Amino acid sequence: MTSLKSALHQLCSEFGRITRLDILTAMHEGTKQAICFLRMERPEQEQQLMKSLGVGRFGGEVVFVLNLNVPAKQQEFGPSSQWADSDIY
Image (cartoon, rainbow, N blue to C red):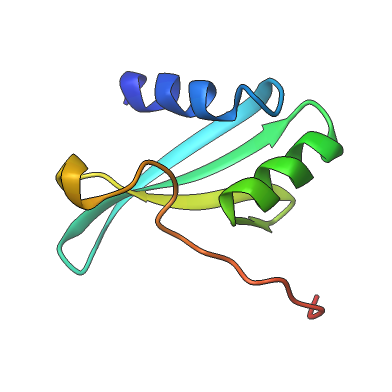
């Protein structure tokens, strides 16, 4: 889990500093996944991160899912979840 946290800090570093990071692991259709919830120092940083990675917000935190047991050749680095913009709140 430590290497995953380091990789996430590195991935997000171009947008600013992560101030909070929580990771939950789960199995979904035979794939081990990490559900990542994070907060950045400023809302503008979070908006840039969400736009760049194509992820969204849940409960006030940026959230995305990473597949953990997929060979690197089959998975691009970054979140496996994709979020669409919505006017529904």
